[in-house]
Length: 224
Image (cartoon, rainbow, N blue to C red):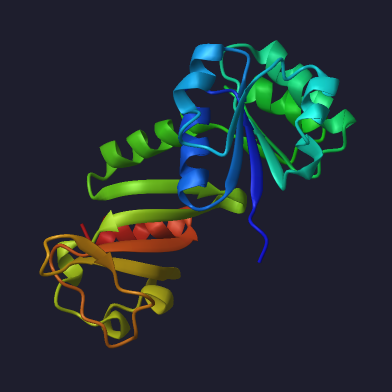
């Protein structure tokens, strides 16, 4: 299977984290920024690190940008540069573009440009903080379209020492268990694959749930 190829444009904290994670997962990553110091800082962690003006279509094309499976535009400081870069990638007919936004106004502009995959790390952080304040057991939450959500939550005490069949997540609460994490002998939490109906939940387990936001809220409220 061919190695996946990605470009990340904009090497602030967000873009750098994406580029490094992709490289760690075995992808071929080209990291791009107009700041030479940022490029120098990441060059040993990715396949290629290039200093260039990403609003320049010829410069991008010279780096074989069209060979990339996807390009992530992670520019955070200058929305005009993000727009121009995104427009340039569209003009070059890059097959998959993901772009970062800060706030609903920027999102609307990119949506009008036809960008389908929009990243908003600030919204995700805000959502996670709000969820953890309302319910301290929630470790992570991800809002999905159509009012669906994925949450990672400490198993509530009311469901300790009960099987998944007895708890009836799907039948009683209309939520699905994706997987669970359990502390093993080495002291680390490990994923327990796809749990079966007779799996007994233990104190300290972390469960990953998927469902409608209202159904997840109801489950967490009832089992506090």
